[in-house]
Figure 1 (cartoon, rainbow, N blue to C red):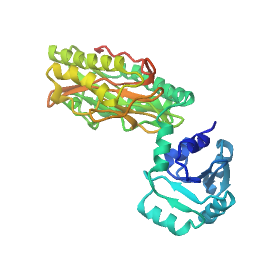
Figure 2 (figure 1 turned 45 degrees about the horizontal axis):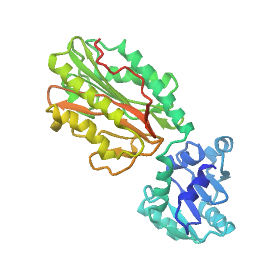
Figure 3 (figure 1 turned 90 degrees about the horizontal axis):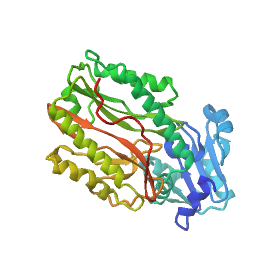
Figure 4 (figure 1 turned 180 degrees about the vertical axis):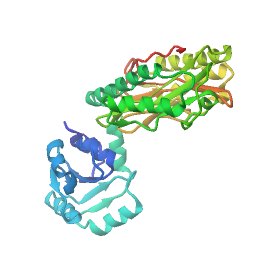
Length: 355
């Protein structure tokens, strides 16, 4: 069963066609990376209508959908709706703008527009549980990121800047198989490590300081995500204590993951350890999030999340403690949920590394 067939299995009754225009979802269904294109799917067939810039690549790359050269888009959409006898067509409520919706209502005359969240919810239901092919791509992305970590450990020393550390990671990943970076690399040192999503600058690494790196690689459209905190020289007793609290919270969080656990239950496992150690107020973000074709996607592990985890969902586990004007520690792996546990895709060392 292909992705389009699976989509119509989860769509509510009464939806005859699906119009998919978002870049990520278009690639999810067709395998084609592009900045434009329209997917029109029916229960028995799907089409990718795409312009001249991409037509040659699309005819070679796309499987599961007939590729059509875009000429007069709305005439083509109406003709296909009539051909398949569709009375209703659903749109992506999560990505379609008000302006686009108004255009659809004006130009699509062959079927009634379904502007509810039905299509976006159905696509989300498919994307949240990964296939083996998707998992393999994410593992490949993670291996690229981990190789970059091993490489950057030889580069980090007193005198190099945060920007230089970030560039070292980025260059290595892009040169060694990454399609792109998962997001703007975070590389921080010293007091800046207390900024959970700080921006790398010209701050220089000093002896006895932490270096925090949060980054990932993209491989064939799928992301990896990891964070490691290392120390240049000997850490203070407080630095080592805080690091070990975060590590314990992370390890126990991973050990708690299995099918059936809720996001808020998982968050509580790690958060309680940090609270009991006296640092609860200094862990201000959720424990984790899903990863896939987007770096942040469902499910979520926060104190508010009622999401029940299912097998082959992905979740990051990234507790942290951030002491303003002193230092911060975060350790992040990402794992595959299984019926009786999980598989950790992150193999990089996470006991405290001193350089």
